[in-house]
Image (cartoon, rainbow, N blue to C red):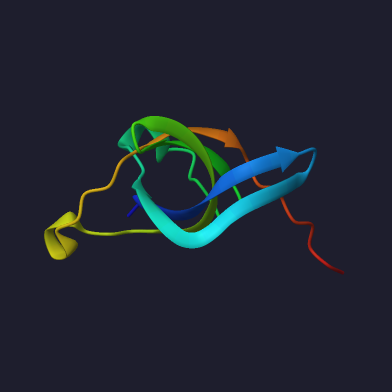
Length: 91
């Protein structure tokens, strides 16, 4: 089964490689089926619907949530902006 939900922090500012996050609350968004083929992972930056506008967020968690069990609906992820760098194995 594919993951269909992310939890993420809003990005307030970005200067070069430094992100300033709004860490007051962790928000959730739904991953549409068309974005599940290339899975979103922790550390990715994605564009989401948020409060009538689009916003960039930093993904902190990705998981599967069944609507039938939780009865929750979330706004959706629009696109992946930047993938998290791949970590090299330590020898």
